[in-house]
Image 1 (cartoon, rainbow, N blue to C red):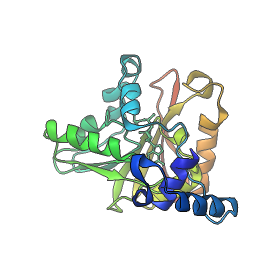
Image 2 (image 1 turned 60 degrees about the horizontal axis):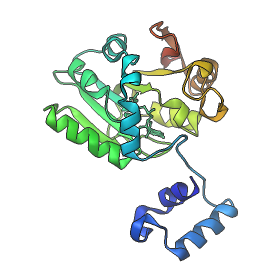
Image 3 (image 1 turned 30 degrees about the vertical axis):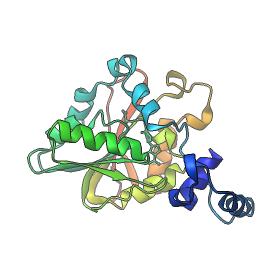
Length: 236
Ligand SMILES: C[S@@+](CC[C@H](N)C(=O)[O-])C[C@H]1O[C@@H](n2cnc3c(N)ncnc32)[C@H](O)[C@@H]1O
């Protein structure tokens, strides 16, 4: 994880052969980290793109994802602009892209370049021209537009380390009536029951949302193991 942080913080161009940081860069990085002069940033539960794709598209997981039912609950319209935050292998992208057609667009955000490439290839194969992959940062999705109708986060928030900061930054890309849909696991029913670092409760999410001026606008009872809430701005 430290290596990952250092490589993210100092940029891939300073990596040596085989992805190993060059010694001087590593020493400098460690010194700065030790002095607290650079923030330690990480993805919780990180893994390489190939491993992510295998896990995300396993038949056991796919059985309980409810892709089309979930997208139907989002009340999307043709022409809408959506950000699929932490899009992973892009399982939700095609359903989202078809639902907002014609005229709409899906920005598929992830922090793993391998997943971004995978989504781009798949969109090309499926001839879905309204999916735009976006390489985000740990605390900011780095989107190219500021008029999103919806940001969609399925099984993602618990992987983000700085959750309130991420949500605050994400909100800047939404139009005033824009919404944030969050689906995450009830801690004891999810894949990390013994790891509090990889859990996010509905109550915690409500508190982070409240801190950035959002409130629960719709609670959707679609899953036994996950909570599903759509948030919108409190003052409108
Ligand atoms: C469990 S996967 C879920 C993927 C997809 N939403 C799905 O349900 O199939 C979590 C994804 O979040 C991504 N991720 C983790 N931290 C992130 C961050 N700060 N910004 C964007 N994506 C992030 C990971 O790379 C991974 O692809």
